[in-house]
Image (cartoon, rainbow over all chains, first blue to last red; front, side, top):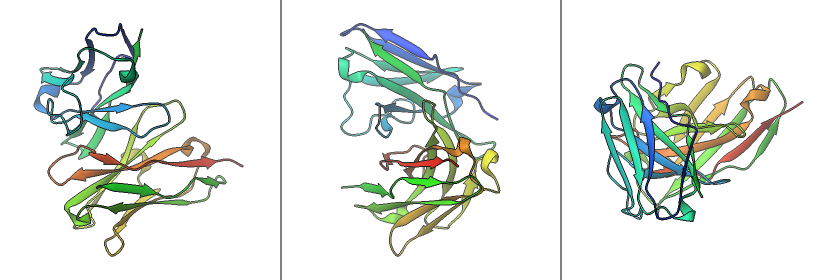
Length: 108
Length: 119
């Protein structure tokens, strides 16, 4: 089965740029979606199809995907961005959705 | 506006079954499918399966095959997830997530339903 690998944690100072990676075999050939989840809340879609943003999501959130790594980039990080972030793809060979293990973003 | 409202928390004994509902409003129900996702305490997101509201077709995660059934009722715009033969490690928050027909992204999520399995 297809596996997505995320770093368990990323730390960044306010105003800096956070980059959260999602590794998978030839992930560049798949569409990657990213979710933000704050404690006690349901996940929220922040980037879809590698780099598109749903309405209402700040432009500070962006995504890229190439080769074996997809990246969620959060510019000008704010305290309110502190959350868990998950990447997700559809694995066509199994018709399964797959989530990464999640990355806890800490704003120092 | 799009809303997905799930049923309330449940406490079940090992071996029992649970059925969680997800009532949709604010859009045409059959234009979108649903995935169900669960999250054990302190853990990450686990995809459980997907159902087409248009055809009723389903795809279930291999690890849950034989224990899970997903259905929809188009007359009430409600999706259901039933999990049988519950074990303690099924204790989790269960979410429904709406998916556009041409994508696997969950663009709207229910608020979650806590299912506790305990003797």
